[in-house]
View (cartoon, rainbow, N blue to C red):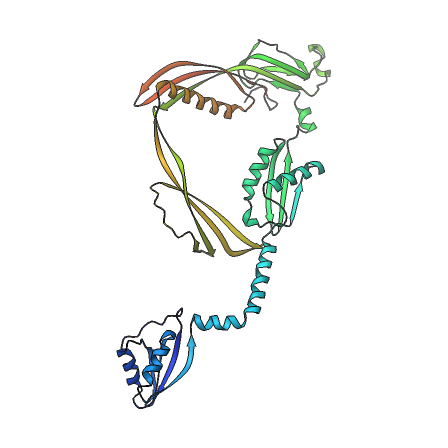
Length: 399
């Protein structure tokens, strides 16, 4: 007889048959389509096996047609476990409630500390954090990550140079570094200012020091612009006193850039359709708990967010993952020669501003050469820029 695998979900019962040749009763069960497995013969008059809980009624009807006696010695499976749990439902409810309450207390934010700011700014930042969803009593699972909060605070407060967001248990700590002027000893060290590149002076403002150049003067890299020697007396140079120099000097400078822009551009965009899947992570095992529907997207982009659980400083081996599968499509756009040139010049301007700083002003651009090869527009552009040419270090060699 081929043994059947017992089903724990349906429930199984261990049956003992007593009588002459008890194994014949199990053979009779099989002929009446009652599955029996794990058959064991204890003696010549006793034999045991396992059946499904749902087959007990049919088994009793079959026994009435014989002289065998049946004894139910054991029961296994979920139906019997549920009966036992119902008897302990009050204790289980209390245990689950206490566990959920404990998890809520340990996975929520109860303390928010901000270091490095004044009391007034701290109050304002706490209000901003509340708007961003960071507040006392809220689950960390429902908040943005520390890096996202950091970016939002830097965008909100331009006077902040850096902010570090760290989590420790039920506490959120923000360490803020504000933008400050150079320290006094660093300022005093700058007794001379030099040009860091060639250019024509367009604007000059000297708060402290003696200027050596004027507007419309052409200066070369490394040339002395402002000195801390207030008295121009070569004969008493050894006795002249140096003062700290404070000045802002802007000049017109020039840059060349070679740009290659395709006439056909491809880019991916989201269609707005998405499917969310949720997983419970236990160690390295990811168990799907929601979102079993398969997507039918041809092109996708996936974004995952993992929420970890901590108990104090101890990282629990449990995590919750939300995987968002977004549908994307590739769009091919044909551009005219003028549009390709405009896009290339704009990209070159962005690269130049990123290289020189946001205070840089591009006042003019001129195309020196232009060709079309292999579906691309190649241009050679000449830029005229207004920028600060004061060297940031005490040197006459420039950058």
